[in-house]
Image (cartoon, rainbow, N blue to C red; front, side):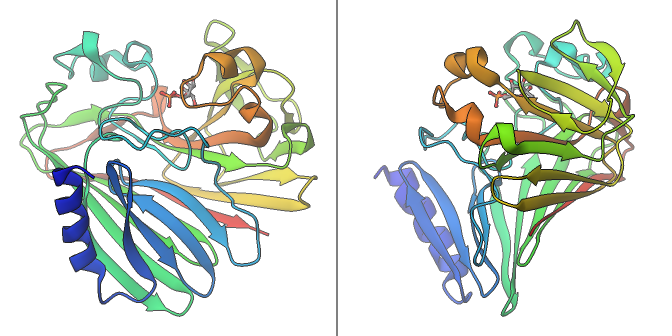
Length: 314
Ligand code: TA6
Protein backbone atom coordinates (compact mmCIF):
# COMPACT_ATOMS: atom_id res chain seq x y z
CA UNK A 1 0.00 0.00 0.00
CA UNK A 2 1.47 3.40 -0.99
CA UNK A 3 2.44 5.84 1.75
CA UNK A 4 -0.18 8.40 0.72
CA UNK A 5 -2.93 5.80 0.85
CA UNK A 6 -1.71 4.46 4.20
CA UNK A 7 -1.64 7.97 5.71
CA UNK A 8 -5.02 8.83 4.22
CA UNK A 9 -6.56 5.63 5.57
CA UNK A 10 -5.17 6.35 9.05
CA UNK A 11 -6.65 9.87 9.04
CA UNK A 12 -10.11 8.68 8.02
CA UNK A 13 -9.99 5.75 10.46
CA UNK A 14 -9.31 8.27 13.21
CA UNK A 15 -12.26 10.39 12.07
CA UNK A 16 -14.76 7.53 12.21
CA UNK A 17 -13.41 5.37 15.03
CA UNK A 18 -16.23 6.32 17.41
CA UNK A 19 -19.02 6.23 14.83
CA UNK A 20 -21.11 3.09 15.17
CA UNK A 21 -21.44 1.24 11.86
CA UNK A 22 -18.90 3.31 9.91
CA UNK A 23 -15.42 2.07 9.10
CA UNK A 24 -12.68 3.31 6.79
CA UNK A 25 -11.48 0.74 4.28
CA UNK A 26 -8.74 0.60 1.68
CA UNK A 27 -9.46 -0.47 -1.90
CA UNK A 28 -6.08 -0.51 -3.64
CA UNK A 29 -5.10 3.19 -3.86
CA UNK A 30 -8.44 4.54 -2.65
CA UNK A 31 -10.02 5.05 0.76
CA UNK A 32 -13.72 4.49 1.30
CA UNK A 33 -16.27 4.42 4.08
CA UNK A 34 -18.23 1.23 4.67
CA UNK A 35 -21.55 2.07 6.32
CA UNK A 36 -23.82 -0.48 8.02
CA UNK A 37 -27.01 0.14 10.00
CA UNK A 38 -30.30 -1.62 10.69
CA UNK A 39 -31.82 -0.49 7.40
CA UNK A 40 -29.07 -0.55 4.82
CA UNK A 41 -25.42 -0.75 3.91
CA UNK A 42 -23.37 1.47 1.60
CA UNK A 43 -19.85 2.25 0.46
CA UNK A 44 -18.75 5.81 -0.29
CA UNK A 45 -15.32 6.62 -1.77
CA UNK A 46 -13.64 9.84 -0.70
CA UNK A 47 -12.36 10.21 -4.25
CA UNK A 48 -15.13 12.08 -6.02
CA UNK A 49 -17.45 11.64 -2.98
CA UNK A 50 -18.60 8.69 -5.06
CA UNK A 51 -21.31 6.50 -3.59
CA UNK A 52 -20.29 3.09 -4.92
CA UNK A 53 -22.98 0.89 -3.40
CA UNK A 54 -26.30 1.07 -1.58
CA UNK A 55 -28.22 -2.00 -0.42
CA UNK A 56 -31.37 -1.80 1.70
CA UNK A 57 -31.58 -4.62 4.28
CA UNK A 58 -33.17 -7.71 2.70
CA UNK A 59 -32.92 -6.38 -0.86
CA UNK A 60 -30.47 -6.76 -3.73
CA UNK A 61 -28.01 -3.92 -4.40
CA UNK A 62 -29.78 -0.87 -5.86
CA UNK A 63 -26.70 0.67 -7.48
CA UNK A 64 -24.62 -1.04 -10.16
CA UNK A 65 -20.81 -1.07 -9.90
CA UNK A 66 -18.51 -2.57 -12.48
CA UNK A 67 -16.57 -5.71 -11.52
CA UNK A 68 -13.64 -4.30 -13.48
CA UNK A 69 -13.23 -0.99 -11.65
CA UNK A 70 -9.62 0.12 -11.16
CA UNK A 71 -9.32 1.60 -7.68
CA UNK A 72 -6.57 4.04 -8.67
CA UNK A 73 -6.13 7.68 -7.68
CA UNK A 74 -7.35 9.99 -10.42
CA UNK A 75 -9.41 7.28 -12.15
CA UNK A 76 -13.19 7.61 -11.68
CA UNK A 77 -15.02 4.39 -10.80
CA UNK A 78 -17.48 2.97 -13.34
CA UNK A 79 -20.74 2.77 -11.44
CA UNK A 80 -22.43 3.97 -8.27
CA UNK A 81 -23.16 7.71 -8.38
CA UNK A 82 -20.36 9.81 -9.93
CA UNK A 83 -20.69 13.56 -9.28
CA UNK A 84 -20.45 15.45 -12.58
CA UNK A 85 -19.59 19.16 -12.27
CA UNK A 86 -19.20 21.94 -13.60
CA UNK A 87 -19.95 20.43 -17.03
CA UNK A 88 -21.73 17.27 -18.21
CA UNK A 89 -20.29 14.75 -20.69
CA UNK A 90 -18.10 16.30 -23.40
CA UNK A 91 -17.36 19.95 -22.45
CA UNK A 92 -17.88 21.02 -26.07
CA UNK A 93 -21.53 19.91 -25.80
CA UNK A 94 -22.17 22.28 -22.87
CA UNK A 95 -23.48 25.86 -23.06
CA UNK A 96 -20.86 28.28 -24.42
CA UNK A 97 -20.94 30.24 -21.14
CA UNK A 98 -19.54 27.16 -19.38
CA UNK A 99 -16.95 26.41 -22.06
CA UNK A 100 -15.73 30.04 -21.82
CA UNK A 101 -15.04 29.56 -18.08
CA UNK A 102 -12.59 26.69 -18.66
CA UNK A 103 -9.09 27.85 -19.59
CA UNK A 104 -7.80 24.42 -20.62
CA UNK A 105 -10.89 23.36 -22.54
CA UNK A 106 -8.89 21.21 -24.94
CA UNK A 107 -7.80 18.96 -22.04
CA UNK A 108 -11.19 18.82 -20.34
CA UNK A 109 -12.11 15.33 -19.05
CA UNK A 110 -15.68 14.09 -19.51
CA UNK A 111 -18.15 15.08 -16.80
CA UNK A 112 -16.11 17.84 -15.19
CA UNK A 113 -13.13 17.66 -12.88
CA UNK A 114 -14.41 16.79 -9.40
CA UNK A 115 -15.12 13.06 -9.65
CA UNK A 116 -11.38 12.25 -9.56
CA UNK A 117 -10.56 14.70 -6.75
CA UNK A 118 -9.98 13.73 -3.11
CA UNK A 119 -12.95 15.12 -1.15
CA UNK A 120 -12.64 15.49 2.60
CA UNK A 121 -14.80 13.85 5.23
CA UNK A 122 -16.45 16.56 7.33
CA UNK A 123 -18.97 14.50 9.31
CA UNK A 124 -19.92 10.88 9.95
CA UNK A 125 -22.89 10.56 12.31
CA UNK A 126 -25.02 7.58 13.29
CA UNK A 127 -28.35 9.48 13.42
CA UNK A 128 -30.30 6.50 14.79
CA UNK A 129 -30.50 2.71 14.40
CA UNK A 130 -31.76 3.12 10.84
CA UNK A 131 -29.82 6.09 9.46
CA UNK A 132 -26.21 7.18 9.05
CA UNK A 133 -25.25 10.64 7.76
CA UNK A 134 -22.01 11.30 5.87
CA UNK A 135 -20.89 14.79 4.88
CA UNK A 136 -18.12 15.28 2.33
CA UNK A 137 -16.73 18.49 0.82
CA UNK A 138 -14.31 19.77 -1.79
CA UNK A 139 -12.85 23.29 -1.72
CA UNK A 140 -11.93 24.55 -5.17
CA UNK A 141 -9.52 27.47 -5.42
CA UNK A 142 -7.95 29.12 -8.45
CA UNK A 143 -5.14 26.59 -8.59
CA UNK A 144 -6.68 23.61 -10.33
CA UNK A 145 -5.80 21.48 -13.33
CA UNK A 146 -8.67 22.80 -15.45
CA UNK A 147 -7.93 26.49 -15.00
CA UNK A 148 -11.35 26.94 -13.36
CA UNK A 149 -11.08 30.46 -11.91
CA UNK A 150 -14.14 30.54 -9.64
CA UNK A 151 -13.52 29.70 -5.98
CA UNK A 152 -16.28 27.52 -4.58
CA UNK A 153 -17.08 24.76 -2.12
CA UNK A 154 -18.89 21.59 -3.08
CA UNK A 155 -20.62 19.48 -0.45
CA UNK A 156 -22.35 16.13 -0.62
CA UNK A 157 -24.58 15.18 2.28
CA UNK A 158 -25.68 11.52 2.20
CA UNK A 159 -28.21 9.86 4.49
CA UNK A 160 -27.99 6.05 4.27
CA UNK A 161 -31.13 4.35 5.56
CA UNK A 162 -34.45 2.97 4.35
CA UNK A 163 -33.91 5.39 1.51
CA UNK A 164 -30.72 6.90 0.12
CA UNK A 165 -30.98 10.66 0.46
CA UNK A 166 -28.41 12.85 -1.31
CA UNK A 167 -27.99 16.63 -1.22
CA UNK A 168 -25.39 18.08 -3.59
CA UNK A 169 -24.60 21.75 -2.97
CA UNK A 170 -22.30 24.30 -4.59
CA UNK A 171 -21.40 27.47 -2.66
CA UNK A 172 -19.95 30.28 -4.77
CA UNK A 173 -17.33 31.65 -2.35
CA UNK A 174 -15.79 34.00 -4.92
CA UNK A 175 -16.55 37.51 -6.15
CA UNK A 176 -17.90 36.57 -9.58
CA UNK A 177 -21.01 34.75 -10.73
CA UNK A 178 -20.40 31.52 -12.66
CA UNK A 179 -22.36 29.12 -14.79
CA UNK A 180 -22.33 25.35 -14.27
CA UNK A 181 -23.97 22.08 -15.20
CA UNK A 182 -24.39 19.38 -12.54
CA UNK A 183 -25.39 15.72 -12.55
CA UNK A 184 -25.62 12.80 -10.13
CA UNK A 185 -24.75 10.12 -12.69
CA UNK A 186 -26.51 7.19 -10.99
CA UNK A 187 -25.97 3.62 -12.27
CA UNK A 188 -28.83 1.32 -11.22
CA UNK A 189 -28.69 -2.47 -11.00
CA UNK A 190 -31.45 -4.34 -12.86
CA UNK A 191 -32.29 -8.03 -13.33
CA UNK A 192 -32.11 -7.74 -17.13
CA UNK A 193 -32.54 -4.63 -19.26
CA UNK A 194 -35.29 -6.49 -21.17
CA UNK A 195 -37.37 -6.54 -17.96
CA UNK A 196 -37.09 -2.80 -17.39
CA UNK A 197 -39.31 0.17 -18.13
CA UNK A 198 -38.84 3.76 -16.98
CA UNK A 199 -41.99 5.40 -15.61
CA UNK A 200 -42.80 9.11 -15.52
CA UNK A 201 -41.30 10.36 -18.78
CA UNK A 202 -44.30 9.98 -21.09
CA UNK A 203 -44.81 13.19 -23.07
CA UNK A 204 -41.52 14.68 -21.82
CA UNK A 205 -39.24 16.31 -24.42
CA UNK A 206 -35.75 14.87 -24.74
CA UNK A 207 -32.53 15.60 -26.62
CA UNK A 208 -31.25 12.46 -28.33
CA UNK A 209 -27.44 12.59 -28.40
CA UNK A 210 -27.52 9.62 -30.79
CA UNK A 211 -29.76 11.42 -33.29
CA UNK A 212 -27.78 14.61 -33.87
CA UNK A 213 -28.93 16.10 -30.57
CA UNK A 214 -32.39 16.57 -32.06
CA UNK A 215 -35.39 17.02 -29.76
CA UNK A 216 -38.22 14.48 -29.55
CA UNK A 217 -41.14 13.73 -27.23
CA UNK A 218 -41.29 10.49 -25.23
CA UNK A 219 -44.23 8.34 -26.21
CA UNK A 220 -45.41 6.17 -23.31
CA UNK A 221 -43.15 4.37 -20.86
CA UNK A 222 -39.50 4.10 -21.95
CA UNK A 223 -38.27 0.59 -22.67
CA UNK A 224 -34.67 -0.05 -23.65
CA UNK A 225 -33.83 -2.38 -26.54
CA UNK A 226 -30.97 -0.41 -28.15
CA UNK A 227 -28.32 2.13 -27.15
CA UNK A 228 -30.07 5.00 -25.37
CA UNK A 229 -28.38 8.30 -24.47
CA UNK A 230 -31.09 10.91 -23.95
CA UNK A 231 -31.38 14.12 -21.96
CA UNK A 232 -34.97 14.54 -20.82
CA UNK A 233 -35.75 18.16 -20.00
CA UNK A 234 -38.39 19.49 -17.55
CA UNK A 235 -38.93 16.06 -15.97
CA UNK A 236 -41.38 15.46 -13.10
CA UNK A 237 -40.06 15.31 -9.52
CA UNK A 238 -40.60 11.55 -9.39
CA UNK A 239 -39.56 8.91 -11.95
CA UNK A 240 -39.19 5.18 -11.44
CA UNK A 241 -37.48 2.09 -12.81
CA UNK A 242 -39.90 -0.84 -12.99
CA UNK A 243 -37.94 -4.11 -12.92
CA UNK A 244 -40.33 -6.99 -13.66
CA UNK A 245 -37.50 -9.49 -13.17
CA UNK A 246 -36.92 -8.49 -9.54
CA UNK A 247 -40.54 -7.43 -8.97
CA UNK A 248 -38.93 -4.17 -7.82
CA UNK A 249 -39.57 -0.50 -8.35
CA UNK A 250 -36.72 1.98 -7.79
CA UNK A 251 -38.14 5.46 -7.25
CA UNK A 252 -36.14 8.64 -7.77
CA UNK A 253 -37.48 11.80 -6.12
CA UNK A 254 -35.56 14.81 -7.44
CA UNK A 255 -35.34 18.40 -6.27
CA UNK A 256 -34.00 21.33 -8.32
CA UNK A 257 -33.18 18.88 -11.11
CA UNK A 258 -35.21 19.56 -14.26
CA UNK A 259 -33.00 17.29 -16.38
CA UNK A 260 -32.75 13.51 -16.39
CA UNK A 261 -30.23 11.66 -18.54
CA UNK A 262 -31.15 8.07 -19.45
CA UNK A 263 -28.26 5.96 -20.68
CA UNK A 264 -27.62 2.38 -21.62
CA UNK A 265 -24.59 1.76 -23.91
CA UNK A 266 -26.03 -1.44 -25.42
CA UNK A 267 -23.85 -3.94 -27.28
CA UNK A 268 -21.44 -1.96 -29.47
CA UNK A 269 -20.62 0.87 -27.04
CA UNK A 270 -20.32 -1.65 -24.18
CA UNK A 271 -17.38 -3.16 -26.06
CA UNK A 272 -15.64 0.24 -26.28
CA UNK A 273 -16.18 1.42 -22.72
CA UNK A 274 -13.39 1.27 -20.12
CA UNK A 275 -13.99 -0.85 -17.01
CA UNK A 276 -17.17 -2.31 -18.50
CA UNK A 277 -17.78 -5.96 -19.44
CA UNK A 278 -19.23 -6.77 -22.86
CA UNK A 279 -22.47 -8.02 -21.27
CA UNK A 280 -22.67 -5.45 -18.46
CA UNK A 281 -25.25 -3.42 -20.42
CA UNK A 282 -27.75 -6.19 -19.61
CA UNK A 283 -27.63 -5.53 -15.86
CA UNK A 284 -27.61 -1.75 -15.58
CA UNK A 285 -29.31 1.47 -16.56
CA UNK A 286 -28.30 5.05 -15.78
CA UNK A 287 -30.87 7.62 -14.67
CA UNK A 288 -28.87 10.79 -14.04
CA UNK A 289 -30.45 13.55 -11.99
CA UNK A 290 -29.16 16.77 -13.53
CA UNK A 291 -29.16 20.45 -14.44
CA UNK A 292 -27.81 20.44 -18.02
CA UNK A 293 -28.13 22.27 -21.39
CA UNK A 294 -30.76 25.00 -21.00
CA UNK A 295 -31.12 24.01 -17.33
CA UNK A 296 -27.47 24.73 -16.47
CA UNK A 297 -27.41 27.13 -13.53
CA UNK A 298 -25.95 30.57 -12.87
CA UNK A 299 -24.60 30.65 -9.31
CA UNK A 300 -24.27 34.21 -8.13
CA UNK A 301 -21.28 35.31 -6.02
CA UNK A 302 -22.04 34.46 -2.39
CA UNK A 303 -25.01 32.23 -3.23
CA UNK A 304 -25.52 28.48 -3.69
CA UNK A 305 -26.85 25.93 -6.13
CA UNK A 306 -28.14 22.48 -5.22
CA UNK A 307 -29.57 19.20 -6.43
CA UNK A 308 -31.55 16.81 -4.22
CA UNK A 309 -32.11 13.11 -4.92
CA UNK A 310 -33.88 10.47 -2.85
CA UNK A 311 -33.63 6.86 -4.02
CA UNK A 312 -36.14 4.38 -2.67
CA UNK A 313 -36.51 0.75 -3.66
CA UNK A 314 -39.30 -1.70 -2.79
O1 TA6 B 1 -24.56 9.05 -19.31
C1 TA6 B 1 -24.33 9.80 -20.40
C2 TA6 B 1 -22.85 9.72 -20.80
O2 TA6 B 1 -22.41 10.99 -21.18
C3 TA6 B 1 -22.70 8.69 -21.92
O3 TA6 B 1 -22.61 9.33 -23.17
C4 TA6 B 1 -21.43 7.93 -21.53
O4 TA6 B 1 -20.29 8.60 -21.99
C5 TA6 B 1 -21.56 7.94 -20.01
O5 TA6 B 1 -21.99 9.26 -19.71
C6 TA6 B 1 -20.33 7.49 -19.27
O6 TA6 B 1 -19.36 8.48 -19.28
P1 TA6 B 1 -17.93 8.14 -18.60
O7 TA6 B 1 -17.09 9.35 -18.81
O8 TA6 B 1 -18.19 7.86 -17.13
O9 TA6 B 1 -17.44 6.90 -19.30
